[in-house]
Length: 205
Image 1 (cartoon, rainbow, N blue to C red):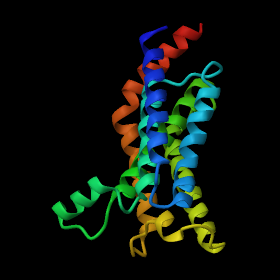
Image 2 (image 1 turned 90 degrees about the vertical axis):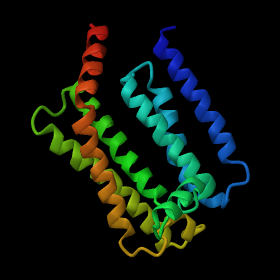
Image 3 (image 1 turned 90 degrees about the horizontal axis):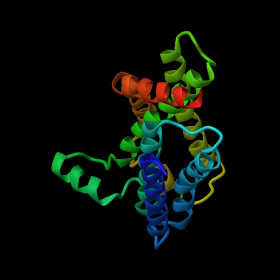
Image 4 (image 1 turned 180 degrees about the vertical axis):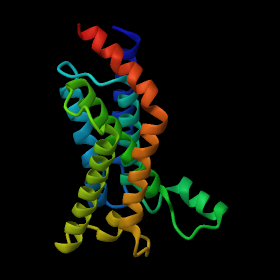
């Protein structure tokens, strides 16, 4: 096996270990299920599609980190992650910003996903950055709609699942963070991403 395959296996094992830890006495079982399900589904799909369409190492690492963020948020609830409680006290902030951190990563991983699929499948050849940013923002909006539906139908531990912490603009800030993440991803990762995509194309020929 290549060194990258070993890396992917190590990340998968780490994800499973953190997932098990996350499910042990979480703050709210319903919140844990709602918050960790996307991570579990996403990792499952990436494992299932690995032989048919293996992504770049950059994407897998970012997806892995994003999954860990969801597992940690599911265990503590996004508004009660201890490290960010400490940062809240240190910075004199009124809220725990772990959810903002999570949505930033949501934008980063979404942008890398769409960018890689579009380039390698040659789906979008013009205005790629704008399309990628728009779709990344759409993913964030869809997640906010899921949160809205959970409130509308009043299912589960709504307060911990939403994690608004009394902020009436929480939905808008979440989407701004995801938008910022997608833009930062294109600005800082595009050269590395292009090199890894080119390497993937060479291996496929």
